[in-house]
Structure formats: structure tokens, C-alpha cells
Length: 108
Image (tube, rainbow, N blue to C red; front, side, top):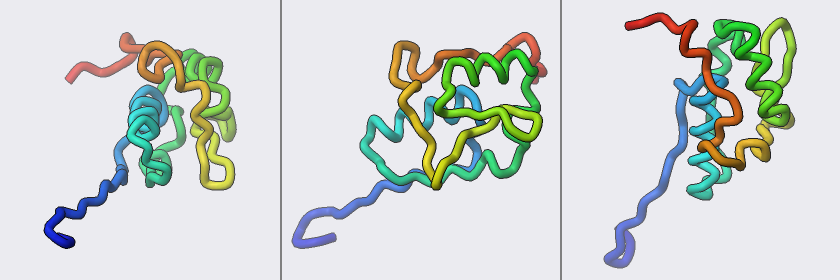
């Protein structure tokens, strides 16, 4: 508390968002909130979008060529100097120019 006012800060760390719709919507929301620096590490624990089908990977790459790159056998986040470009996320559909292939998902 500072001079009778509550002082708060917002943290935007996450280890769970993976490449694809999840990280796109997460980054779009963070951008909307005006948070200029966030830590996103979930992509370090997997081989990009390798778990998704190739067609799904290529659909995300085509829809968001600034967000993704095709390297080492999989589409993955394109990180340049610690940054991810977000320009292609600005559009209708809450940052979703491509959709997951729900038919390939395992039911739980």
C-alpha cells in the first residue's frame, strides 16, 4: 500500500501455451491489455507444432507467416531477437486465421 492507495502489478508468465490457436489468442489478449513484455516458455518443451498434422501446421504458417516459421521439420514460433511479430493476429476471429484440426484430436 502506498499513501492510502493499493499498488498492484500484472504478471503475464505462462508455461502452458503452445504454438497454434492457444498462444495466438494469449498473445493477442496480452497485447490488448498493453503488456509489452511477457514470458512464454511452453514452446521450449515441445518440437513446435510437430504433434499436429502437416496440413494443420501449414495452414497456421500460411495464415500467420510473421508468427511462424518452418524449420527443423516442424512449424514453430518465429522468434527474432526475443520477439514474436503479431501483425497477422489483428483481424476477425480473435487472432485465428487458421483453426486446429479437431478431427485429429484424441477424445478425453
